[in-house]
Length: 200
Image (cartoon, rainbow, N blue to C red):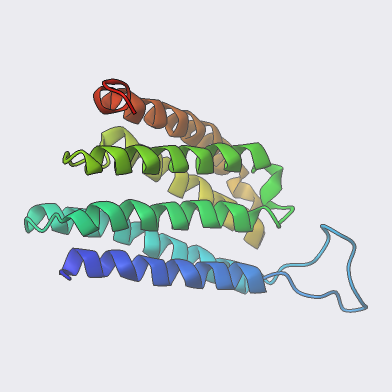
């Protein structure tokens, strides 16, 4: 277990803290249960989730940079790093669907597309890695991650009450959607020799 891999695993712990903050953020109404979709939110917990999310996102770039700089790229890291990314982004998006402020921009179908792409790429990576060929994230996949982090971050600020960031979430929504679909198709193309080159 080297330093980059330790940082990757720490991202999972930070991600869990993000989810806890978001799950505790909706508070009960002062006079009994509120109407569906109208529960008030504790901004401090959402801002805490935002800060933790940023820390987790930064670790994604730090662990990869260190692994390459120190020549510590491992098979475990190639699996654990994208797995931690998928949990962070997919889990955050699913959790944000409970907040009306976030769903001004965030849609269910967008979340489905993001998760479906991650299932597809994970399956492709498993097949290619099993053939003996490394299949790390490429540049397009990294830009996809940046756009998704931007989008989730903007959605978190909206949920906390900072409506001035709606534009950032809207731009991030469409840019990250294009990169999510495009990078998924790119991975299929890169693995075409393994996926379509022989009998199953």
